[in-house]
Amino acid sequence: MTVKTDALGLMLTAQVALAALGVALPKAVGRWLWGAVLPLGAAILAVRWGAVGHPPMRNLFEAFLWIPPILAGATLLTRWREGVGTVRLDAALGFLVAFPLAFVFSAEEGRLMPALQSPLFVPHVLGYMLAYALMARAFALECAGWERPARRSLAWGFFLITLALALGSVWGNEAWGAYWQWDPKEQWSLATWLVYAALFHVRASRRWRLALLGVGLVAILLTVTWINLSKLFPGMHSYAGL
Image (cartoon, rainbow, N blue to C red):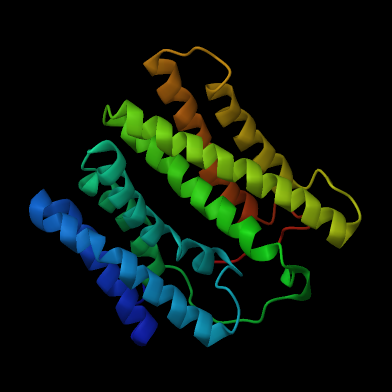
């Protein structure tokens, strides 16, 4: 574990603290502290963007920077639309992402390789990050018994993962001359999509719905970590580091 002492590192550490306090403190106070992650997260993205000169999505570190503010925004929307306070749940998820960003992942800067210099780069990657955050949140909400917010989070996540998968196919055709290459990352992304698609096509009890959400979450975790980073799965997407 390393402590990042530059301006970005201090902001990331502050984000960890806000997420932890959002979990630990009473909701009346924790709501405001966790809500502060939304503007702080936006500032973190702006600082990183300015430092590297491109949208911060080149590797796993940069892509994960988007997740805490996404979760903080989802908290506000759920409270507004559903009247449900999900502060502690969302702050806990945010902490699980914010901690490795601040103390584990490398913040080494790098140039955007030519393969990623496409107008589809931002919507494709951001679509997946939004989708993955919302899908993980849907599982947590379902575990907590908040079925309606869970289904709304799932619906938006499924829409976004479908959009990201389609954009990736178009981008693949532009870059490699084919819409589908059976690359390991493509296969696991499709497998993840199929798991969540099943939730909309079967009449499942809460137990089975929770099981499918759990399987989908495992597929997401494997896709963004092991499949991306392991040398056991070489492919056209083998460029994303920590």
